[in-house]
Length: 281
Ligand code: NCC
Image (cartoon, rainbow, N blue to C red):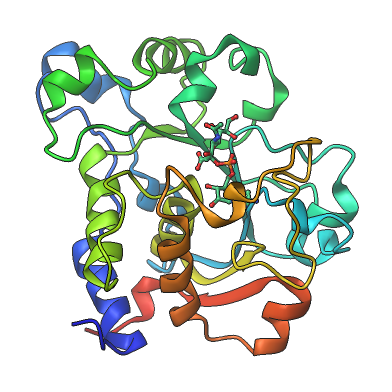
């Protein structure tokens, strides 16, 4: 299995890692009225055209410091949809990261930690939001609901009530672990039993919604740096290489799937991936 071709690996992702958000059909969410609380259309339905095709071109912009001085802003904004992470801003960094945001993936710290001002910050307005929280591997939704890593449920419910028009989803914790399973299944070593990073989750999410995905500065370019994020003065190489998240293993899996030229990787930190809908398994 470790010798899988890119095509086989893509099929494994397509079959075993189908996009899965909470839909309110499972307890305890079913008895809490979540079927009426979650958006009426699934994420896939939201972005599927009438011809049943997804979004044509998508960009995933990681928060790595190496994107500074890339001048990639215009290129990033030329995609039909752009995915960004957590509290990563565009304001003041447009030249390097662009200013279009279609979807933002946020971990539960963003919802729970007052420092992020989830309720008032413009970062979380006028975009589709997708939140997640790391549940234990053996997923028990009751236990997770009672003690999430960071409490995202209260803020989620409140936001849905106040802004019902904003598409806002919570990933099913089993989806996150199915992604982990694919990483472990394709890695020789035993990887740490922690969920993949928001970066990996976001890449797979866009592969489910888009026909083609460009990922920026996930695999570091020649600008690789210890600067953790492009938007703050904090240096730690673990941001790029991993500590809690199995980043190195996630990244080598994505690199194996790269269909773009090597030069793009070096100069732009850009990986080109196919959408999963185009893969015939
Ligand atoms: O740092 P973070 O991620 O928000 O970055 C988003 C994704 O970009 C990729 N990345 C980032 C920096 C870097 N030098 N190289 C990279 O490849 C990663 O794929 C990363 O997932 C997260 O995954 O949710 C994470 O969130 C932060 C933090 O919670 C948020 O930024 C909110 O402040 C985590 N840091 C801490 O908890 C201290 C980080 O471990 C992972």
